[in-house]
Image 1 (cartoon, rainbow, N blue to C red):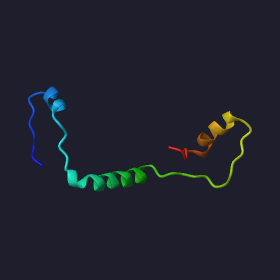
Image 2: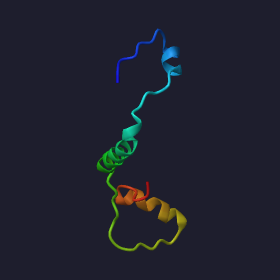
Image 3: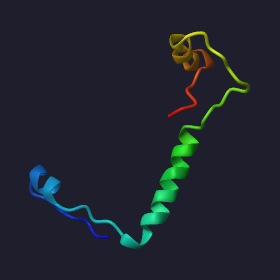
Image 4: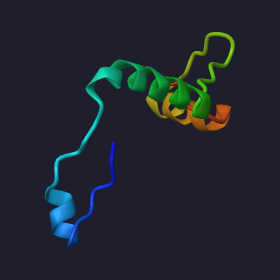
Amino acid sequence: MGVEKFRSGEAMNAAPVVTSRDQGFERFIRHCARYRRITPLVFPRGVFKFRSVAEAQEAPERVGKSAVP
């Protein structure tokens, strides 16, 4: 892939994005692996019962990190 030169920002924004079509799936898999390393899921152990909806909504803040993205 070569270097492309533009005369203005508008010309740069109007240009189509050049990508390699043969590596799309592999790039997607690398992106997913990177995302999982950055944001690991944290699931607290056990089953929780709540007395109200408000208490259930406050639970992720008390645990530290939400298990639901």
